[in-house]
Length: 205
Ligand SMILES: N[C@@H](CCC(=O)N[C@@H](CS)C(=O)NCC(=O)O)C(=O)O
Image (cartoon, rainbow, N blue to C red; front, top):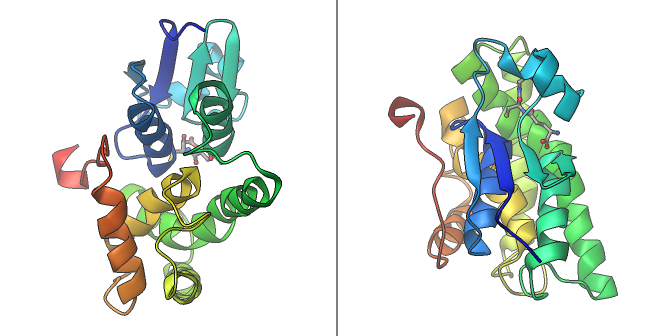
């Protein structure tokens, strides 16, 4: 198993890319991180769309293997490099993990992630509706976490990695976390993990 050729096409303020960067760090893997100039449209260039026809980061390259979609990258890294703790493989917990990956690409994307996208990158979505979606998502998450330490299997897993970035940075989309104490406590637990790396704040990126 070689890890020498891992390369991640990324962007500092992308929560999707942060998922992949956090997973690499937690697994103790080093990768060549190449930031793509999203404002300049590099993600739609010929060379980049050969890697990912959707023209989006993150993209992981491992030798001849090219993986796009952040949760697919988590699956690849988990299956290839994890010992079963961060990426559970038993039937029940694997299914629960998959459920949170779907949530990351649906409710989380349409709520907290999109509200931040509107503020940071002037994305053309309805702000009021998006902020409402975000609060509905966070209220559900808060209820779910009321009697749980982590999202799956009562331990820290890639489910937490998939959901963390855009939830922790929701205030950048004018979505306060104050009404969600269980979510705030979970964020603190995620950030206390060994080898945790943060996503930069917009002013620091
Ligand atoms: N579903 C994709 C979403 C990736 C995504 O939205 N990437 C954004 C950055 S956060 C991007 O590259 N946007 C540039 C564009 O769409 O032109 C994933 O999970 O990786």
